[in-house]
Every structure is written in structure tokens, then in C-alpha cells.
Amino acid sequence: MQIRSRSSLWFLLPIFFNVIGGVIAFFVIKEDDPKKARNCLYLGIILAAIPILLILIPVLIGVTILPHFPVMQNMHYI
Image (cartoon, rainbow, N blue to C red):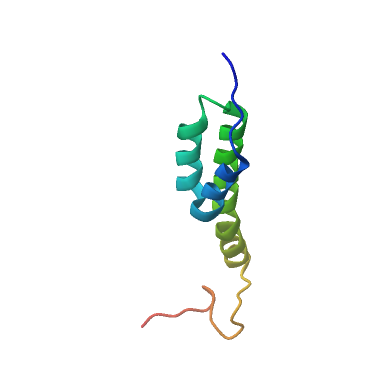
């Protein structure tokens, strides 16, 4: 099997569309350049996970961006 090098512009797809772009790029270029296809998929997954982690981790440890907004503490319901 001959590996044909694909353009590095394929990395723009996961940068703009995260996981969906990574999956599309993976399936389009996996036959020609499997290493670049796998890297596009990984890039999409990582770029989708970063904002989730930046929001989830502070909420889990009780830190909030808005200092006067209650974060699951002393929330009494009547």
C-alpha cells in the first residue's frame, strides 16, 4: 500500500468543528495518509475536551467565575 501525503490543511477541519471535523477528516484521508488521519481525529477530540474540562473542573471543586453566584452550597429549597 502506497501512502500518499495529504495537505496539512486537513487539520483545519478539526480545529473549526472539533470532534465532527476530526471524524470527517479521518474517514476522508485514512486511506491515503493514515497517520495524518489519526492525528486529525486526536486533535478534534482534544480540542473538544479542553472547554469541557475548563468548565467542569472548577465547578467540581467549587470555584466559580462569578464570585457571588452560589455553587451548590447552602442551597435551601422551600
